[in-house]
Length: 125
Length: 390
Image (cartoon, rainbow over all chains, first blue to last red; front, side, top):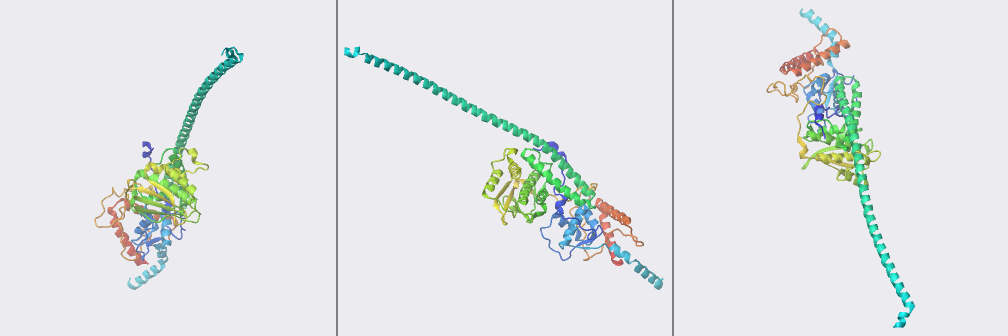
């Protein structure tokens, strides 16, 4: 039934990405951007068996502390959008916590830091 | 006595008797000849009839073969194109994973899978090509593959998993048969109901149970389904009706050829149909090695974990060989990107460049194992820095 020539060709992945995302839509950019930080929810000890292997893996990756969405995607080797959809789903289900990227907050502190610095200079310098 | 002899009436009687006898004998002969002729004709007729049936059957068979051959090669082309398009879509999804286009790419992918499945089903009925070679895959993945091939895949829920794999030759047939079952289950139940899949280990192997909440089947339909699934195969593609009902015929052919059992004769707890696919031990393997899921990404230069350097002893690693970070503090703050100059607010282009550099960094980190430990510790260091800043 299968000719030998058929085996030379590469087959696409068995499980397609849209099945992994369960057909959900991409989350909003402001809800989950490339540099949003994500970590596993601390109280979550036991995971339900209903999660797919990909979701389990995301939780594994996230359990080590806050990671950016981009970094998580790098770990899983899935398309970034697919990872974002899954992360959004897991966050909604309460398995993950997200927080906005810290970089912006740090920039807002610049003047305060400069004040502190000048204060220190005035005192010790 | 003489008076009798001389009596002409007697002579007339004798003559009459002789004539009658002669006539009777002749008639008898004629009747016999006729009878023989009739038997001859009858034989001839049945002979003719026999030959006629034979030649009609032969012609039908020939026509069927011709139809099958044409359909088979036509489907082979379509299947090839669908498979090719699937590969292109995988590549595009990896390439534009960060873009909003991904949404549409996923939808095209879904349509393409359904299209491929239809062609594949027709090919199966024509003894055609089943698809490209597959590796051993977990039962769960095969079920999900089947799920992805039906229109209403969002309504399908997989409730349980088992730690078994399906051997490579049975992956496609089981996925296709299950897809046809799921297609029936989702088509014959209302759009707001869920089709449940339970995967269980049983003494005979692994059972995949599909329960729908549809209206079920009446006795007649059930009998027809059983017939299609068991002995009385649909011999011809022409016998599938209009619109053609491929599903059960395809399942029947596949289950017979690859040695698994499918039954649809029970009722689901929700009043619909319960379909059970029973995979015998011959088709099962142990759980296949967990590979990097999906997408043969553009970064194929990354060596697979098996060929990579040996992991540092004592350090826990993830399944693809990356060092696993342990949480030390409940909320370590890791900056979202590489250390950045604090002096000025960043423009969009700068942010993009930084993110790019970051991605390249993680990529090279995956490529070279020995650097990983350093990288982790440096990230750890920068995390404490970040903590002090905020």
